[in-house]
Image (cartoon, rainbow, N blue to C red; front, side, top):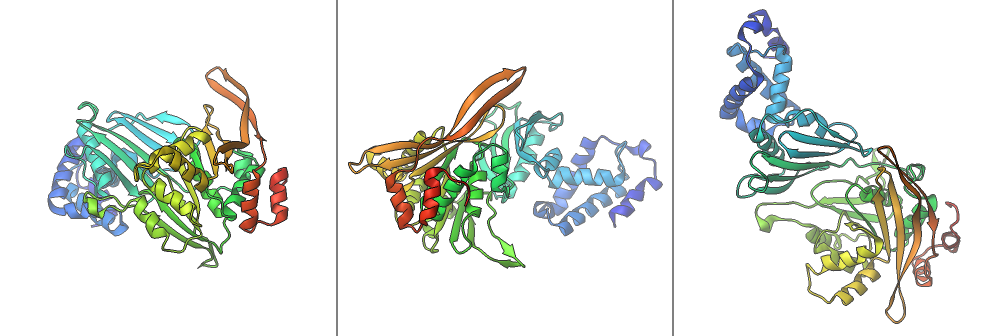
Length: 454
């Protein structure tokens, strides 16, 4: 029976005489479908499965002459399917355009953050704490995770680019039901002009970082959540020549999209990988495992999407043994970034802090600090080099910095102005490494004098 046929249901009886509350209809239909077609519901998503489930829902409504006031049969079937097999009212936001994050603070308190930094508190909400938990459980089913009293804190994913972190009772109050953060990451294919036009960085800064990766200097991009770390790292990887082999490692969800085609033929050399979480610890594949595997794939550039734990030690080892590594990390300044690397490295081996500091500064001589300012502008705040002197001492050189010249309130708006400036030239030791790694003299000269894009 087709959905179109079901839409003619109203020809045979008056909905006004048989209409029910949507919530009551949902409970009846859920009980019926779950008892007979639960596997089909859990498999949802594919078009043919979706249409089949809708046919079963439609047949049930027609057999029992069920209707909801002010809803056509087709609209009712769609609403019931969305509620049962998808993610209730959140579906349109999860798969909407221009949305970066959905925060469920409680069953009746949901916020949506847009890519322009605007945050909106939704009028819509779940029907109850139990309703919220049931919808979130469906989300977690995609990644094979179970939310229950034994596992009340879960990290999962909805697809390769949507991450979800969830807390339920008893970690949150019973009247809250569930708290969740749904992070939607859409790979952004920004050009250099987009960064420059938006004031994120200057052309000179972007060219410098691109040349670092091109000529074998590992780079770490630091900042808080939503500061633009991954967007910048993704663009830097697009500047790598097609002849160089790239291996990317990301945690659970895909944020990078680097494969390039011309006339339906792949022209560059990229391997994208994702970690895998499992309730069986032996089946976990973490970033450290993938990084160890990456080194067996003969990569010239390794991208660790984000250093979070012990993979930091393996990453610095890779960077000190002939591989170029690009990574991101949560940190609040350039200098603090190297200290945070030391902390993460200690999760793998209990080595003295001074020794680890020497290792990570050698591995990542360049650190970039990004920040989203109060006015929602994303800025590359600083690019810093750590120069290791002949006696082992470290000289932290600020190469570029965003200097704020105005910072004030205009009503309820923040007004922030400033400019990027070159603070220092790269050290002689880094110049030497550039030349040894094949950088042409004329490119190095432009870097030293802050010249225009070649």
